[in-house]
Length: 417
Length: 78
Picture 1 (tube, rainbow over the protein chains, first blue to last red):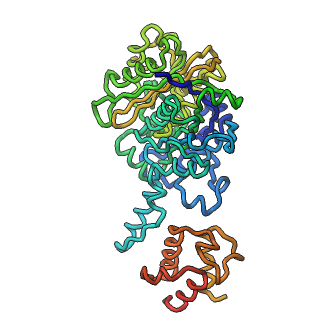
Picture 2: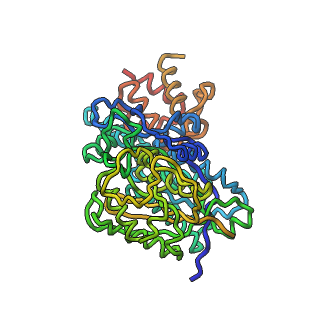
Picture 3: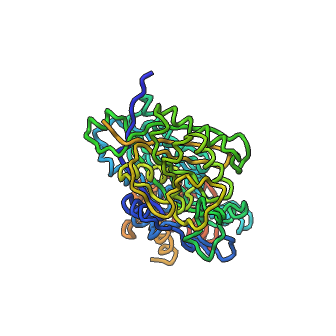
């Protein structure tokens, strides 16, 4: 079966490091932390009092009041990031076949803020149900792709993928596959998350998943450091426009990179803990490399899941050594979560954008906040600690793993006609 | 404008994102002020909250214009 080639022709990003693609890359390449004390709510009684929130975010800069009220923040972020990507792609919506244009978005949770608010209102009352009629359509996780299809008139494949922190990578792989199979010419994909709420922080705190380094938020996310103590919650969105290669060439589109392949696997092990030997992580990277039909030795950069949790970082680094063998020492590894925090279901989207920009700029963004080596990690692996590194990047792989044992990897390759 | 009429107008301006000058007594929520069925439900709920009353469904269905809302509330508000 002949599969079509798929290229990336538009990017959008709304991140804790910056509210567009260029400021996001500026933050990544210069090694800036997006963490700061929580402003969304009073976190005084919470074990973790900081997060990687968006900076200078006001929905009314992007939506009128009526529109803004009908969207949970996770949808607002999606609309803004996707719009940047559509504009960036230069697509002329009057000239494309809208029946072959679709939206596949990813989010781990959906409208957590809306859910929390409505349930709080109900609990504070006398038991009379007075739920807002927009409660359900604001909260449900699939509403993002619905809003995007309405805005752009895209009538092709349309849904949202949910696989916790792997959600957006699943969305990207699905969008890639529909184009490869000829079911769509153009897809808006990506992911968004807005879980910096009392329920989000309190819930992850209860699992002891979050860093509690309240005296130094900006150094709290420290993947692969001996003193890492959990992830830092982030929020935001990123979007990619994926397009059939011929379609992109025919309209003279600018091409950032080619989507080379995607892989999926499950740990089949535990609801939240990674497999200690990284079996699922090994399998998923192998699947992606096989799907791309390229030698593993052409991958020069791995944007790891690397959340800064004690166990996850170890199993992932073991998996990389297993999959890449000697080449593991030639490639660069970095966790951009050291800067952005962990955007949960949107992580795969902002990290795909980081991987693509690393190819465009031939520069590996760093794993910041490295202070103390941990003997659990092979010292010959290059984690790109503290400072970005210029180097040849022929292809970059992005890993994301989610609670439930979901694993996803996607590979982007430098575009070559 | 009565106090009730002013409150009703403020709610409509807020929820439907329209200009106060558009909120005329004869204006229909759906035909003139851009409300969909969910917006209309939300408006009724806001009236209930603001005026501390319960509007039964069969009566809520009769409230389709600004003027009808004001008259209903002037007659029924506590």
